[in-house]
Image (cartoon, rainbow, N blue to C red; front, side):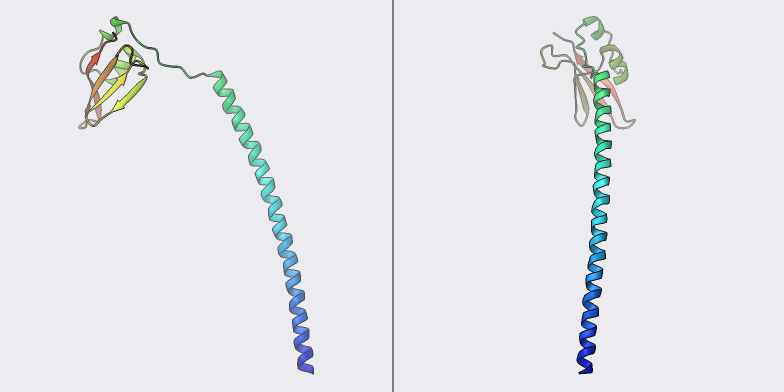
Length: 138
């Protein structure tokens, strides 16, 4: 009988301990959820602030589109062997750039209406480009 009472007492103690631990675990779990919800709210505020700053910057500085350089005088300033920087100073930024193994083409016409292109050779030895040819706008 005594053994039965000891087992019963042990079982009751075990149940009480489990219930207490479950309660603490539940409280800890709920506390963690509250912390995470606060963190999410803080991050949402930061994202909203960053989006507002991004929108403000975009409104202030619009994207500048390249201008088609159709003046033949500019195109006739080009010389074989010029660097991309020199060509860009004369003609401006290209609308499109295509690179291949041994050459790079710059297109100065968004819809190929004027057929204005510049071609550079790729020099792997010194990692540079040099003007190899061009087609003036028509």
